[in-house]
Image 1 (tube, rainbow, N blue to C red):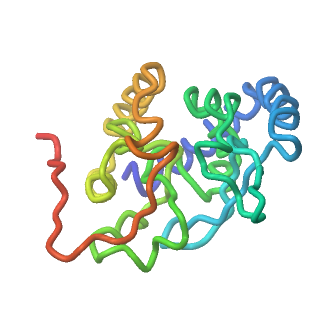
Image 2: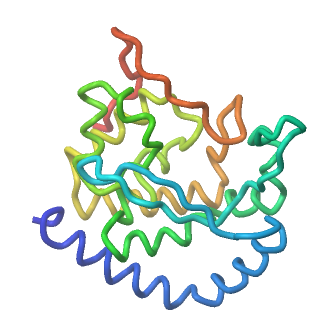
Length: 212
């Protein structure tokens, strides 16, 4: 009942209120972003959403566009400047996704929308993470974020899809706030962001186990 009828209504109302209340913060971050990113403070990218339908995700830019002598973008850890690290550590870079939630591309809680190029790399189980709208935050983001192995993240996503409830969403919100305050899981152990998902080798199973 909650997932089918009320979740979308709650998302719409909360996103609308959130945009109105946070509008002064938007103005400040737009100005600072234009300065520190030397141009457009917004970042948009196509991501797969509900039923793998492609939409444009909107975020505040955290990496500048510096390029090497060969014309190629420099590595993430170089382009992720101090201002960008601040946005990521506070999750303020996610604020524009309220627009995605408002128009129905996303929900507040759900599996994070990843790259389009990952779609053909998912196995049958992992595809089910798209059976619901992607979220601003999700179970995996509240329990390790970028430090969790891909297979475990996807296992958490699919478990969430199969167990959606108001109680679970409220718990994820609480756990996400705790993770943001502690600044847990902002980067993986070997990258400024997260290594590309190249597909799960046959026979490899997630080590994560659902909570009892």
